[in-house]
Amino acid sequence: MSINNNSHDQDEAQIILDALREIQTNPELQAQAEKDPESVLNRLGLSDIARHAVAAGLVVMLATPVVMRPAYWF
Image (cartoon, rainbow, N blue to C red; front, side, top):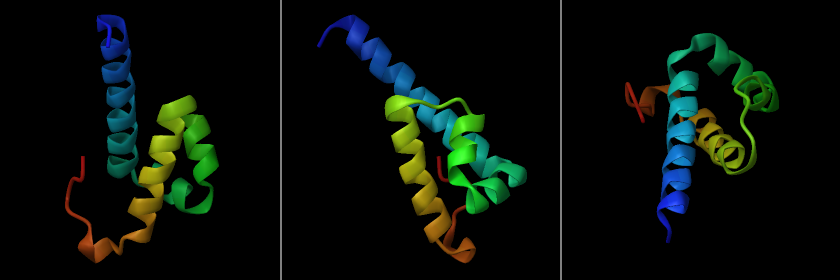
């Protein structure tokens, strides 16, 4: 793996983590994600791998009962 690929992968991972944190800490985004997850992905400007990863994260966050959610997942 080249240094450029490794850097791109780290950037992509950071984008994913930042987006999930933003959703987790923003009640408005959480409410929007429950009603229209696609609009949240669009609002955050996510594309490609980050979009798919955050969508999967949303499924997990929305499927987990609030009582079982830790204060901060990511």
